[in-house]
Image (cartoon, rainbow, N blue to C red; front, side, top):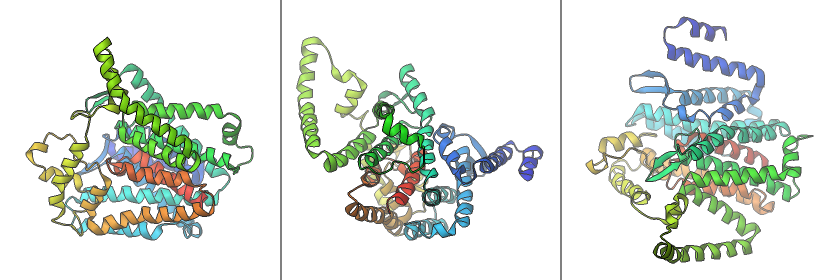
Length: 453
């Protein structure tokens, strides 16, 4: 602490002072909260996402912004923490597959098209397993206290983004993307992140409700405030769930809508198959009859239901609002480049740099260089070897949880559903770049793995 304080005072570079201050602040936080200090990082990460362009340190083409600084801090602390808890580390699942994938990402640095991107993205990937492992260890080490603190942190981390998002909707200061106006984004850099974060919290609430319905303890802590809310004050959670669904709706993120629908369909198949069938029939009939009804209203009363942004997003397919064709176009144009290095790829994290260097003239106008498909991204960057290792992580996770589910009455269905939803979202979004959401996803998966084994 003394050394960091001297760096802050004495060095002439303000960027180094900020980095030193962050490190000093975390030491203070650790001294106060101990091993629960990781929850502070998880609490603030969604709120500071919008500051990702604030560069703290740069050298040549390598730069560290405030979010990257937190990522490095998280990784350093996690290594130290896990080193202190080796007896629990032995129980952490999926180590071999994760370490194999991470090792391959490191190896691709030797031939990477852009080494700085490979370093940055590899650190991000390491953070994901670090969060998974530390949460797993903490859940095993403190089985009574940590689960409730974790959920308080998850719900608390959403307060500021949601309040700001609702303000953006009311004041009409949201983003205009793909010809869709006023898409709320809260404190995130994109509405898609806001939507998927709200979806994760909704799934976490449902998971606790299912434990209550099965007669299992929601949290083991005596005199648990969270237990009281779930059992005696359910209207709080019903209100929160409605807010979360509304937030998902007014981000106008169709992939998140699909994820929410997939999650509810899986639960419906298991718990309410008849209700699911009835709702599905009503939804199909409603969609079929919408267009003739809307045409009648236009012709007779000059009322167009599609003038409403939400209805338009649900029912309209056009070049401006629909990015499916654009995604397919990028995939088709990137595949010839992929075949030049199909086995080993271009280096983890290098997709954007390679695409920028090789994109045809008709794509120069693109304001993004991302794949919008995690499978294409990983395949392009790490080749067949990396893509297989990446997919094996999820395959082993699903196999293990399904086996547990078959023996325990599908009590972990939310965990399984959340993995399937994530895999579906990854088909058309940059989930690996949605750091606030993916940090929390792997954190919750770490907790749910400790809970369901």
